[in-house]
Length: 385
Image 1 (cartoon, rainbow, N blue to C red):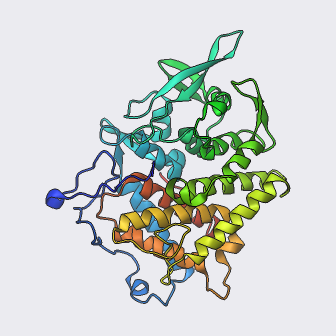
Image 2 (cartoon, rainbow, N blue to C red; image 1 turned 90 degrees about the vertical axis):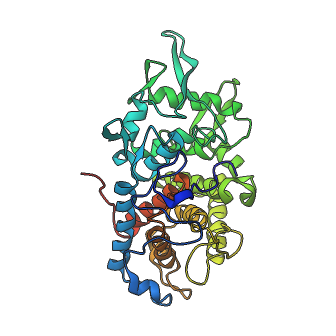
Image 3 (cartoon, one colour; image 1 turned 180 degrees about the vertical axis):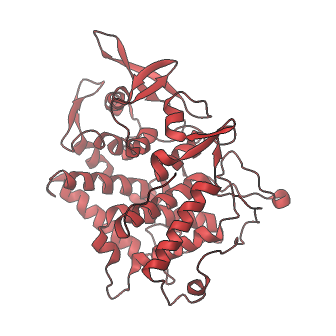
């Protein structure tokens, strides 16, 4: 799977060393198949039939979010853009990285021309004939685990950090803007040979209404509705990370469509039906202890490698936290509050991996899921000082 690499657990000597692909731990690492310290609420964890109350669950969520932000500090000399941009997805502009002898905001560091492995931007097409101004393109480096692994992945994530179109980005020593980057994404849509638009629709709907249309590099008119329709045509179970990226992107743009007053009709009704179908599959695949499946949407399952399990459960949880409303997240039906159970078990996975060097995509998608869930259920959390 393109962006679900094998975990970078530390083996020899069981010593804590931040690896190229890993996200570090602040305590000595432990071997695969075992668990780390379970600091937090122990009484609830011992009785799987009993759920924590809201105050206890909130404490567990905040403990996981605070530990990941403060104790898993990434360093640009050790980690690459792949790891760092995933962290920014979860913590936005508050996500810090170590650069030399300082901790700096990761988003500002990247856009300001900071050096890190895999952060490769280039000037693109001429977008203003009068001035000769060019667009901005992120190079595709699928499978590198350092650079951009999917079309428009960087901007798909960074666009959700509050970036404005007029903000600056340094490319090959020249000053550009986010608007230049977004315009190049539009031009490059027909050049996307994989026809993979999960991150493209995330980026474009951050700056344009969902009925937006444009002329691309092939001279043809394209639309966001067309990209959504393409995304809906794929088999979810055969898509990257169990189809969770596709479903998260569809849920995000559905929400933006509704927030702007759009109606669930035409392609948007089909999008809604797909979202609801995958919500139902995720719920049906939930394990009896409340944890989400290690087989994504396919069936109930667990995994002996807790970080591998965290990858699947975290990715599915992220989609669900975006797709479901507060009322749906907190509803207590005949199956009990299933999302509260899922949140509780995900927090448990965070506790058990505190001493483990967890691969960053696995870690930060799960983290982002908890951020989204906390915001809807308990209110937003202000990170940083």
